[in-house]
Length: 637
Image (cartoon, rainbow, N blue to C red; front, side):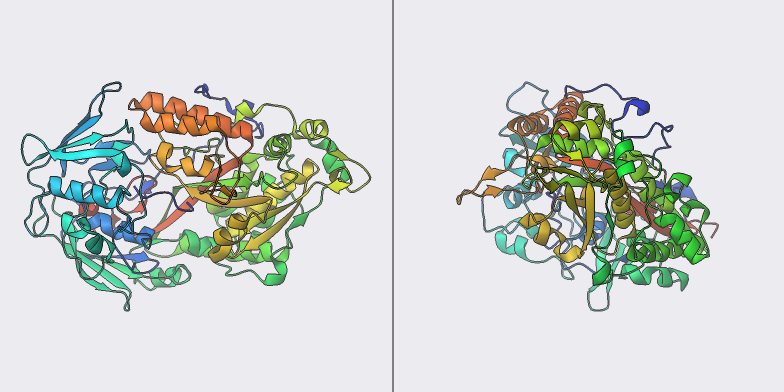
């Protein structure tokens, strides 16, 4: 698994009515973990070409190179082995096309040895058996011991001590230096030794010249100029025969996808950005316009969770302005009463609502909706006053009504308003629980009063030592969902006496600019969720350590705070071979993160995917992945 790039003692399950920072309304239905046009293979006809939209034909199909993109992984997994499959809840199971069995020595037995029993039919498309040589070469490339390999350094390979052949050519034994509980995430995808056996081979972009396959399809055409990567059936494939004769991955920018679908040029297309960013870039003059200053009455009535009026009216404004609103895109009544949104927010909301209506009404297509494996959070910059005070950070977290924020973000897209209550696990993920109650039940107003931030005069904004409690909020430019979220957050915080000025930042400079420099108070963005949070999410919460120059080295921890206890809990979870014990340690880590006031988890980012009627096996996959040999067209179409 690639390293993340923008990348409590286990608490009991918490009742919705006790959640900190949530309204007392009944819990909404959970956002679907996946939504796929499933069909039995017997109902899918042989032949046909599937046309699948990608952002661009990637420069490489080596997912472990820094230049790799999500499109690299989408295409690579159709042509390469992955030893384990993950379902929509991120639960792993051995893929019988490649593994007859895989077993680790039990917890407490040292050293840890994982024995893989490979399917003896598994071969590369040149006839070479998939073998220990491929495992050994990939470990050498990714372990970090040889800096000549220009790798993105996915977690786990540095924990391997040795790889040897077992009883015969079908058995591979991997011995670890230290216990590694996430071993099922390794070697997925697995590359042939010819592509990873030396730095020279590994560092070359895998593109048009890469014709070795260990999957149901192989690369037939790779034309970045024409924007097409074509896969055809692998004649050496030993598993279930692919239903589709060919899959064409076609470079189609998000802004062009609705037209391409309408014109019959695509069969599968993710439309999340096409809907969310339908309004394009925001005018520079409007980027900082979304500012809410608390009123005296709002500050006086705040009680730790926002009132019904503290939700943005953008969805309702969008419906009125466009004259149309899809049944699934109408905001709840609570979302209709808030401070008036700025003109840029209205324009984004209108464009997004119109794009969603069009996506829902395109003939011959269905729109699939699910929660993406991405966690949207509000990050608090603990290195900048007044958020250097943990009490202020905890008060801010208490002031956020996560249920209403999720309502503002997700309801206009036709998804249930499911709030996120865990920093490390997604709502549909195996082991998820909402740990927000560990942050306490004291109202935000009480916490701020105790920290010395009090209201005075008629502004409604709290102050201390002559300085107002006023914060900046960064959000990605051009995103209607982020804008709705920012409006809801701004209204929530205004109710507690915190003034917020939202600032939209171009996506290209969001991380390298203000996040990296620390020029912000609050930041709104999403992190990828993975099946291995103990390793993949550690860098986001690890305590910054001083570098050679004495300045803290942040890694991915843009909140700039952490504790040795949290680091230790992550390390213990990563080394835990018992899945139940690992989850318990992750719950403890999440509880400590809540108590620290590092960030506020809000909701899972939505995933919208259009699929042509009659196409089987496609949609919004969540944590799962396509089973490419099952993709195709129903026999009745």
